Each structure stands twice: as structure tokens, then as C-alpha cells.
Length: 155
Ligand code: FES
Image 1 (cartoon, rainbow, N blue to C red):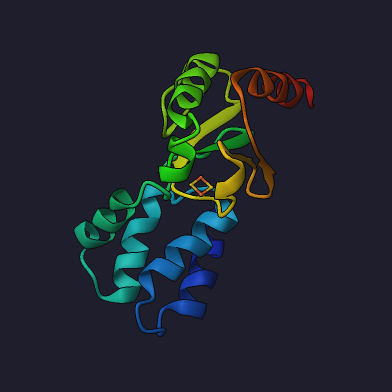
Image 2 (cartoon, protein in one colour):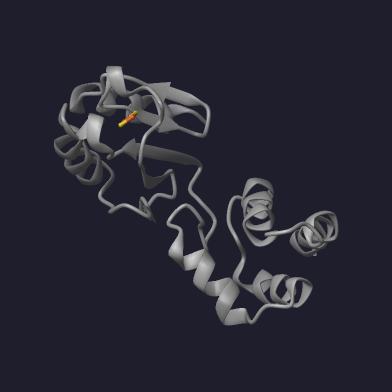
């Protein structure tokens, strides 16, 4: 299985590093979009950890997904500077527009919604990020609705 060979390759490259678990989890998620639950036994074996320890780290960090993401990932910054300029109202609107909560995917599979705690552009909040690379500053509910319509119109 393709996922399995990707995981084995990442384990072989990183398992001997000190503190290898987090780099391995990041690499797997970068490669596959999530950490497949059936990867846990291989990771545990490679690092001489229990499955519970590996699972505990995956579930501790909201960043790690245990299911494949939607076609797009929207991250809403909910850290302090963005809070001071209305990110919580924006977050409520985004959840309503997508009809899903944080750490979930819209029913049509288009968008996975995640929270993030600072995107490094605090002076121009509220900020959201779409698909790892695209930052949108001074976000408003109206701007978000336009962006969402654009996202959904792409093939
Ligand atoms: S607090 Fe939102 S970008 Fe820093």
C-alpha cells in the first residue's frame, strides 16, 4: 500500500533522531494529509514506544489529523491579537458558513476547518490561512463568504 511505504520511508529516515516522534508525525501528515490510525503500530515499534504513547501525542496536538482532510484546509487564527480584532465572531461565522465545527470537515468534503494560534501577522488580523500557503488578512464574514464561494467553484 502506498501509504505504508511512505510511512516506512519516513520511519527509516527519522527513527534514529533524538525526539523523533514529532518530526515523524509532521512528515507523515505533510506527505499524506493526516496520520492514518494504522500507522500507529509501526511508529510505536520503530521508536520503542507503546501504541498508547503514540496515540496520546497524536491526540494531544490538534494540529495532527486522524482522518483525511477536505479538498481545502481553512485555518482561523484564534490567538490574542486576532481575538482583539474580532476573530471569535469571525470563527462563529465561519463555522456557520461551513456548517461544521473546528477540527471537522464540511459535509461536502470541501473544507476542513482548523484553529491556529498565531500566523505571524498579528498587526493585520483577523487572519485566516487557506491550504498552508495563502494568508488572508483583515478577514471579515463578507470576505470569507466570497473566498468560500471561490474555493467551492474551483474544480
Ligand atoms: S494573533 Fe493572529 S496572526 Fe498573530
